[in-house]
Image (cartoon, rainbow, N blue to C red; front, top):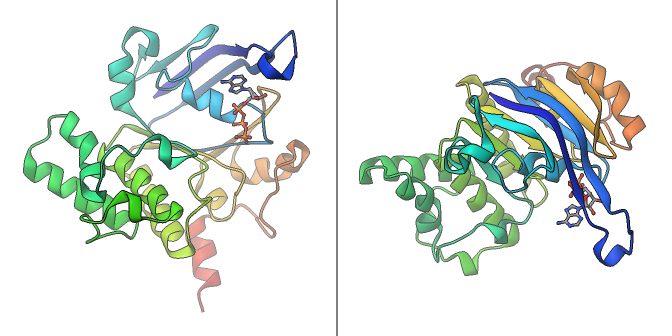
Length: 257
Ligand SMILES: Nc1ncnc2c1ncn2[C@@H]1O[C@H](COP(=O)(O)OP(=O)(O)OP(=O)(O)O)[C@@H](O)[C@H]1O
C-alpha cells in the first residue's frame, strides 16, 4: 500500500517571477491499496507528476508523509525505489544502456537476480510491449515510441509492488497501447497496484478501479470511474465519448467486429 498523508510541496517562482512560488501539491491525503488500478488525472500543472514523484522519493514533500508498504519513504529511499517502479513522461530520462536487452536487464541485475531470472524477466517485459526478439537492437536506432516501450519494459522487469506510469501512452501506436494495457490489467489482477497519470482516458478509464482528479494541487475528485466521468470535465479533463462505466472487458467485447 502507498499512503499519502497531508502532503504539500511548493516550488519557488524561479523564472516565472512569481515571488510567492507555486504550491504544486497542496495537503493531499490518499491511500492506494495493493492491487488497485488508479488513474491520476487533472489539467496541465495541476500537480500530478509532482504528487506521484513523492511515492519513491524523487520529490520530497515540504510537509506530510508518504509511506510505502508501511515505511516512510524518507526513512528508506532504497526500499521505496525498489517497491515503486516508475516510468517517466520522457523515456530519455531513464534509458541507461546501449541496447534494448541490456537496458531492460539493468534493473533486475541491480536487484541481484540470477541470469535465468534476468532472462525470463527481460523476455516477459519485452513481449508485454510488443518488442520480443529485439534485444540486440541499439537504443540509439529506435524511434521515440519504441524508446518509450523499452522504458515501460524496464519498469515491468523490476516487478515492483507498485507501478507508476506518467503519461505512458503518448508515443505508443495502437498495438503497443493495447499490449501495455493488457499487461497492466494482468499486473493488477496479480496484486500490483497500477497508477497511471494521464490526460488520455481512452481505454484506461474502463480498466480503473478509481480516479483521483487534481486541481491546483488538491484532490478535487476521488471516485469510481463512472462517478469520476461526470466530474472530470469540470477539471478540464476530457472523458471518452460514450463512457458509461462498463469494464474494459465489456467494452472490448462490444467493439469487436
Ligand atoms: N522543478 C520544478 N520547479 C519549479 N516549479 C515546478 C517544478 N516542478 C513542477 N513545478 C510546478 O508545479 C506545478 C505542478 O506541476 P506538475 O508537473 O506536477 O503538474 P502536472 O499536473 O503533472 O502537469 P502536466 O500535465 O503538464 O504534466 C506547475 O505549476 C509546475 O510549473
